[in-house]
Length: 281
Image 1 (tube, rainbow, N blue to C red):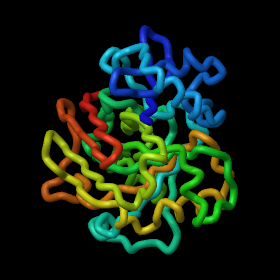
Image 2: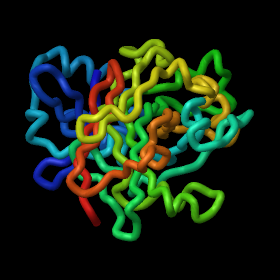
Image 3: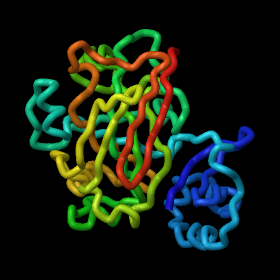
Image 4: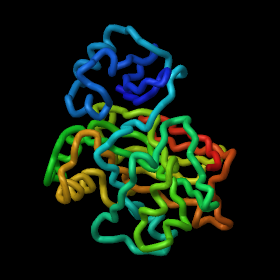
């Protein structure tokens, strides 16, 4: 199933996308007020039952999509997780995952504009695979980690490179308002039994700028979950962004940064295409 968070006529809700349209789960399942709460309540069976009826509430085109999880407890990002990206930035792979955080307010949904900050012209794309945690876990063994995933999505971890380099900490370049994108939807984990077999591609104005497969991750998705869950409990709706491959704009000759008027796409096989225009702040 494909789950979305959206607004319609100023009201926020969430739903499931079918071939006929969108079922408003927030209205139909009043015990769940958001997709994060829906995941926490494990209402997937109820959603399947509604899909089986064939009834829909809206057409997808009539909705404004929000980030898949608008209100996560945490967004954990993994840096330097593909060898070609490590090489292009002149670093060496770390023994343990390189982690940093984003804030919920730094991201937008599918088709919504990513915002180039007025204080920088170094706005870079980073296509990534995002996972959403489905149940609470601490000290999760790698062998059980996939069972803690609710689903998968596309992520554009837009980075403001000059601000990122202000210090050794990444956060100042990673959390400008509206610089990240998350969507278009969450594909439930039962449709992607092996996340190591996905293809990831980023396109800027139709030009392929990143292309990889997730079997090339330095730290695999089960390893990431195990490592993060040793630090603090992972909660339903938590987002883990698994890393970007080589080809980022900052390391091209000449550099290739996003600017107002551009369109950027992140496509992940078995998930879909996250597409966003770029505007100036």
